[in-house]
Amino acid sequence: MKNLLNKLFKFEARKANLTSEILGGLVTFLAMIYILPTNAGILSDMGMDASGVFVATAIVSAIVSLVMGLYGNFPIVLSAGMGVNAYLAYVVYGALGSWQAALLVMFFAGIVFAAISLSPLRKMMIDAIPNDIKYIISAGLGAFIAFVGFKSSGFIVASPATLVSLGNLRNPMVLLSLFGVLLVVIFMFSRNKRLNQLAIPIAMVIVVVVSVAVWNIFSLPEVTETGRPIAFHFTNIKNMFTDPASWGGQGFEKVVFKIFDKETWGTALSNPSTYAFIFSLILVNLFDTTATILAIGRGAGIIDADGKMVGGHKVVAADAFGAVICAPLGTSTVTSFSESGIAVEMGAKTGLAAVVAGFMFLLSAFIYPIFYIFTEPAVTSMALITVGGLIFVGNLKDVNFEDRIIGFTAFFTIMLILLTYSISDGLGLGLIVYVIMMLVSRRGKEVKIPMYVVAGVFVIYFILKAFV
Image (cartoon, rainbow, N blue to C red; front, side):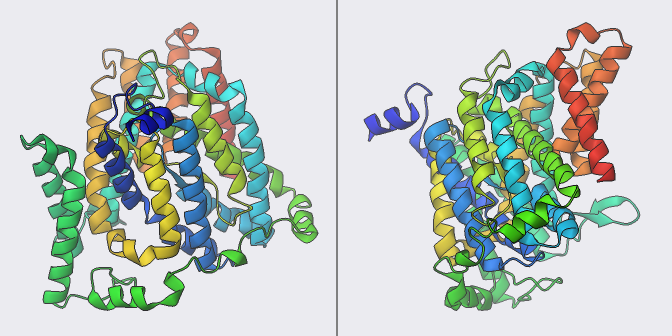
């Protein structure tokens, strides 16, 4: 076993720990499993079979995560990008009127994205970004992950008066989420090192047990106010386990390889909007994945102390492979997920964590009910909040706040990542502001030429976003 781990994942060279790798992959998967039903729901709005999309998303997530783990050897887990799927379903499909044509447009974008990723351009772009900016991006990622956790738990809710506000503290789901966060914090800062390492999975199991007991002993509601079944209720658990449609990967044949008929190509290529959509999808995918690589790069060993990519060509190659295969297999573009930071924070240093998560995604395509109870936000939010906090604190402390331009770049980038609810949008706006501040302060020579190119491309991206 030891020789195999060294051969496949360079365990000794990276000073990896088998427990950390396995737990990191498992917890990252549990934090990401919500993507499967969510993506299925979004893409079904353009006429796709929901169960087919669920299975396709699970299979593609598994394939690409396995490629990332075995070939790239980095603890990065990939699945359907939550921004891209909405753009595909509500913008691209709205213009083309065919889900097959919408997926075909995404396929074209994936091919171009792969070509860019496999060329020196993407590495040049990453290497041109200063170390301070990379720390800022990582801190912004941490803040974003935590914000997603607070939002999904119901602790932070939308408000027409103040945009966001404190949620209902009488809501059992909110209380369970906070209970989970407190458990993780208590375990994380205890003097027991093993408890520190296992803080998140132990807290998850405790919250699940407590939640099932509370929900059924006190006869709490079976569904949420929006009508979504609550996974803690015995009735819903029984329904999930007894529903044949939940097992066996059903529906995949309804969505796979549906983009290659002449009518679909004619619909896509004859619409002038197609080409703007392709460019937009390339930029979104490029910046989303690059931001994630930058954000978790230091902890995952992709970015060295000088801010340069180490073996990064394998990471971007695996990422590019996913962008090409997703549309033919019937789902939206996969991307490197910020939740991978959970594995890194739990001590994962090799691709074994991604392999573990990949196998779990593959299993979920066929035995989803087994994981059903862990999909509740009250369970996943604790991992998002606590890991987000760790990433935020760990990176923000390294930012050079004595340089006012760097300080203001941190302020703009992190705030805009949260307020736009998009890592790529916040990063783009932050980089544009950074370049402007450097120019007006007559420090433009300190900015590398690729940074000007990246800022310029972001300007084009925002123009397209505003008018296409």
